[in-house]
Length: 492
Image 1 (tube, helix red, strand yellow):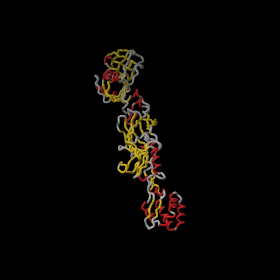
Image 2 (cartoon, helix red, strand yellow):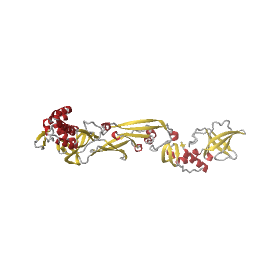
Image 3 (cartoon, helix red, strand yellow):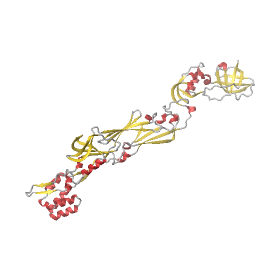
Image 4 (cartoon, one colour):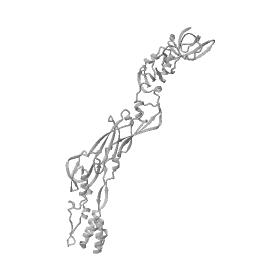
C-alpha cells in the first residue's frame, strides 16, 4: 500500500503538543511494510540516500503525527520505524478541554504552598522596631496611690492619680518636721500622787504617727497610659488626717486601653514565587513586647496581609496589663499578661506599740530630770549620748530609758514589690526569620494553580489532576494522552 508522507526535521520535547510548521523537508510516496499497524507503522522509502536528518513524520491520510524511532537499511531501501505522537495528533482536543490544573507555568495562585523545591541552609532575617507604648521615666507619667482614709473609695481604700510634682509634694508633706497632724503634745503621769507632765519631742511624735502606714499601694504608669480621673481635685487624706496636697481621684472605671499597629516584613522571594512563603515553615515571627516578653506569632495570619494590630488593657489600680495581638481583620492571634505598672516602694515604719506603752508607764518619777535630752539624743542618732545621760542620773532611770528607746525606735519595712522601669522602657520589635528556597524552574515545572482552566488559555507547562479527556483515537492513544497530562506536559 502506497501513501503520501511528509518528512520533517523537528526539535521538540517528547511531552509537548508542538506540531511542525513550514514546508516539509521531503514529501514522498511510501509503501507500508507488511504486517504493521497505524500506531507503529513501518515505511519503505524510495529514492533517498541519507535520511539521518529526518526525525518527524506527518501522514495526512492517517490524521496522525509520528516520531521516527529508527531508520533501517534493508535490501537497498531505507525503512522508517515510526510511533505515534499522541500529544501533537490530538492537540486540538487537548486545547479545547477544561481540566483541573494543579501546576502551570503560565498562571499560579501564590496562596498555595509549593513543596516542590527544598529550602537552602541560609535564612534571611529581618526586624521591625515598634515604638513602646508604655515607656517613661519617674519624672513624667502618673502615680496611682492607694490610701486608707475617710474619703470613701473602693472599700476602705481611695485611689488618687498624681503627677510627679504632686507626688513630690505629698512625700514632703508626709515627712515634714512639724506637720499639722502631730497634735499629741504631752503625756501625763497620774501615779504616784506627784503629777509630772512630760513633753515629748518631735522625734517621738514621728514614731507614734506614721502617715505611710495608711498607703496600701503605689504604681507608676508611663505617659502613654491615660489614668482615668473624676471631677475636680481633692486633698489627699490618710487615716483621719489631711495632707493638704490636692489630686484627682481615680475613676470607678479604673482602666485604660491602648491601641497600636505593626507590620511584618515580607519573605524576599514571596513577590516572585507566592505569598505562601510568608507563612510557616518558610517564615517564623517573634514578637518582642517589652514587659510582655518574647513570644512567637502564628504567621498564617499574615500570608496575604503583612500588617496587624494590638491593644493593651491596663488596670490602673493593680498595674496589670493584657496584651492582645490581632490580625488586620480583628481576629485574635494571642493574649499575654504582664505587670506594666511599676510598683513604687513606699517606706513604712512599724513599732511595738504595746511594749512601748508599758515601758513608758514603768518609768519612775526620777525620769523627769533627764528624759528630754536622753530621748532626743537617742532618736536623733546619738545613742552614746543617751546612755551617758541616763547613767549620769540613776541606774533605775538608765534601765527605763534604754527600754523605752528599744520600744520606740522605728523599723523600716517595704510595702509592695519592686517593679522594672527597664522592662517598660525596653524597645518593642518584631523579628522575622525567612527560610530561602532553592532556585526554581517555572518554565519546566510550573507553580501551583489548583483551578479548572481551558488548556489553550494557559500555554506552557501544565500538570492536570485526573484528566478527563475524550479523543477520536484508539483507546491506547487516549490513555497515553491522559497519562501525559497528569504527569506534566507542554501545550505549545
